[in-house]
Amino acid sequence: MMKKITCIIFALSVFLGTAAQDGNWYYTHPTATPGKPKFTPGERMVFTLKNTLDISRENCPVIIPREGFPVPDIHEMWITVVDPGLPPYEGPDEEVLKVYGGHQLLAEANGHAVFHQLDDLDKDGIWDELFFQTDLAPLEEKTIYIYLGENIQGWNKHATHANVGSYCRHQMPFWESENIGWKIWFANAVDVFAKRKPVLMAQHLYMENLDGYGVSEINRDWGSDIQSVAGSMGGGAICLYEYPEVPDSVSLPRFTPAREKMAPAGSLWNAGQISDTRYAYEVVVNGPVRSMIKIKTMYWNSGAGSYELEQYYTVYANQSYSTCLVRYTHFQPKKAGVKMGCGIRKKPGEESLYQEAGILVSSGPEQIKDPENIDERAEWLIPFIGKALVVKDKYLPEYQFTPYAGGNHTFTVTPDTANQFEYMLFAAWSEGTVYNNQEDFEAYVQKTALEFNTPVEIAFQQLESQGFLPPGLQ
Image (cartoon, rainbow, N blue to C red; front, side, top):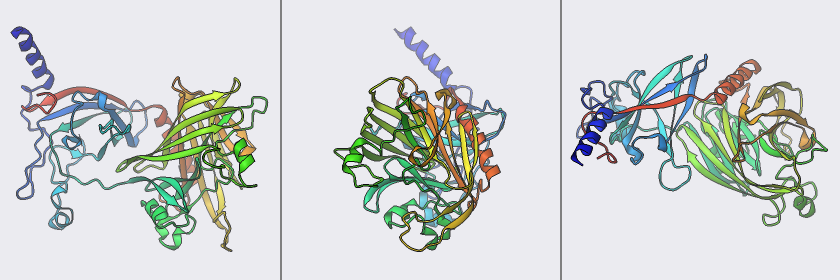
C-alpha cells in the first residue's frame, strides 16, 4: 500500500512540474494598493491553441469545457486567463483607482490577463464553459496559461449584451455587440439594428420603449433599425420544407392553420398562445465578451406535422455576427422527406447576391423607415445595407430561393444525429465604423465562414505548480 501511495505522489509531482520551476516566469501583480495582497498564484494550467488556417484570426472565440479542466471543482474567482505574449499592463494612476477602487487591475508582470467569462449554460449552479477571445497569426500555435489562485483584480467592461424586455407591450429578446444588434419582434424572425459608433444601447430600446427607427433623434451613435420583417424571415429564421411536391414553399412557426382560423385577417402574429405556436425567451449569458439568448418554440402544428425546438443565439465582442445553434426537441412530420432549413429575407429593392456553398450575402442600397408608417416620415436611403447567412458545411447546406413569405433566400440542411444544426447571421451598413461597404462586408463574411468551419484546435498540456495544491487536488 505504501509503495502504491509513493508512486502516486511521484507521478503527481512530475505532472505538476514542482521541481522544474523557480516561479520567476509566473504571472503576478508585482505592486499592490496599500493593504491589498499581491496576486501570486501557485498553479497554472498550460493549454495550446493552434490556428490550422493560413490566415490571421482576430477576436477568435475559444471555448474550454469544464470537463477539459484537470481541476474541474474550482471557484470562478480562482481563474485568471493570461496570454504570455501580450505586453503587461503598466498599472492604474491615482485617478483611475479613485473611480474603480481596489478591484482595478494592477500592474502586471509576465503577460497580460485576458477578459474571460465562466458560463453556466444549463443553470445548475456550476459553470460549464470557459470562454475568451484571442488573436492568432496564420498557422500560429500559441500557449495560454490559466492560473489557479484567488484573484479579485480586474473589472471587465461589457462589449456584448443580452436581455428580455417588455417592448411595446410584449416580451422580446435583444442581443448585441457594439457593432450590430438583433431583436425579435415577430415571434422568431430576427430584426436587425446597426450602430454608427461602437456602443451597447439595446437597454435604452426596451427600458425606454423607443422606436428603433427613431433612436438617432435621441443619440446619433445609436444608429437605426435596418431590417423590415413583416411576413418574411427578416434578418434570419428557421423554416421547414414539408411539401416535396411544392419544393419552393416553406413552413414557418408563425403561419399555421390555427392562425388562419383564429387570428384577425391580415395579422402577422400567431393566434392565441394556447391554440397556436408559443414561444419562450431566456437570457443564458449576459457578457462581458459573449452573450446568449435561448428561444423555445413550442406546440408548432403546421398542418403537416408537429414540432418543437430550441435556438441559442450568441453574440461576440468586436464582431458583427451572431451564431445560432438549432435543436429540434420534437420532430414529427406526417410524411417522409421533410427538410429543415433557415433563411433571410430577399432585399425589397436593388440587390447584389453572393452565394457559394453554405455562404449567402445579400447587399445593396435600401430605403428604411418605420414600416408601420404612422407618421409622414420620409424614407431614408442608405447606400449600403448588408446581411448574410452562413451554414456550417457539415450540415450539407443547399441553396434554395422561395417566393413564399415575402421572398427569401434559404438553405436546406441535414441535421446531425441530435437533430441540430448551426448557422451564423451577419449585418452591416454604410454608416457603421466597420465593414461599411459591399467589398469589405463580403470579405469579412467569407473569412469568418472559413473560421466557423475550422475551429481553433485546443489542447491541454500540463498542470504546473509552485508548491501548493488548489482545492480539489489537496
